[in-house]
Length: 325
Ligand SMILES: NC(=O)c1ccc[n+]([C@@H]2O[C@H](COP(=O)([O-])OP(=O)(O)OC[C@H]3O[C@@H](n4cnc5c(N)ncnc54)[C@H](O)[C@@H]3O)[C@@H](O)[C@H]2O)c1
Image 1 (cartoon, rainbow, N blue to C red):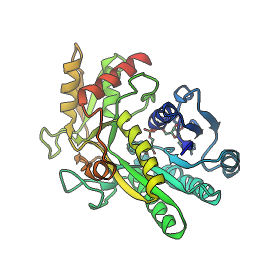
Image 2: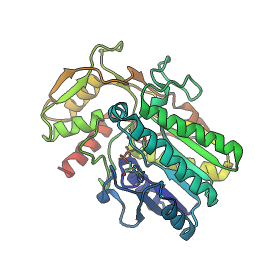
Image 3: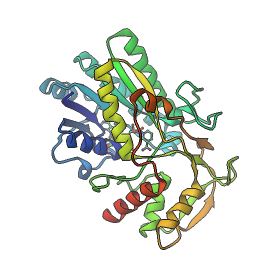
Image 4: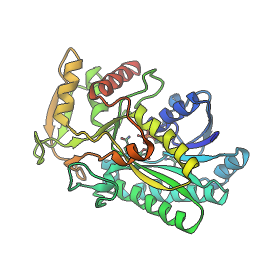
């Protein structure tokens, strides 16, 4: 494994993975149309192509010019609220364009793929810790489009020699310890991002979207994974694809859930002030509790997380927010 094609490398997670791959001495080429991404996040030693993933001519030229060993597909739209308002846009970006991109890869003999999927494909899990084989039940168009692409990949792998790793991320948070990348969007709906914006004074307060869920304190519970552990999971997955040549699906989380109020309380402990919040309405399409059973990845890869600590996640998110203030 030497040459990696990475879509969405101007985004939060893609740029982080790109940095890690480059740290390992690998070559990284990034395709991003900057629709939600930011040029500042693109590592200077990666090749960058400003192009849409559905631009067959452009993508084909890039693939022909470089001999890629594997593709990591991060590009997509990620806002659940926006997907509820405009499901067609999500169908276009996360499914139709992505499918066209994958077909261009497959036709050009690039048949190893790591795909960024989401825990929201599980909807409202019936179990405390949801496993890969548990019931799939997407509750919003964002999750539906991610699931459609998962299923497309699975179908194609049966039809032709495509090998995939589908990674279902739980809630990704935190920033690179060297502060090379982090969450930059001003329109993020992620709790830890908004709490960080409040912490550095960019926003006055945080709105908790519903405190009447059937959870320990009424606020939704999520499994927060540090973006550096998630980035490492991609590298480990890529090596697995080369070694085993086997497709697989993995949850990416720590297996421990924190409620919104617990996250705020922990944030207050590392700051010298309190995060101001108000209770608002529930958001359509939100689940009450989504926590991973992460054992499949850990056992298959003999892998352990390094940053499994909410305070560390919050500290890096805070340092990043201060940096981009
Ligand atoms: N952030 C999370 O907590 C989370 C959780 C689960 C899954 N995911 C998945 O991880 C991936 C990356 O998420 P992120 O948080 O880094 O999002 P992001 O918005 O920061 O990054 C997405 C990148 O994709 C690019 N992009 C979008 N459509 C494109 C297109 N048609 N052509 C070229 N580039 C395009 C954007 O410009 C952006 O740079 C997404 O696929 C998302 O669904 C993220």
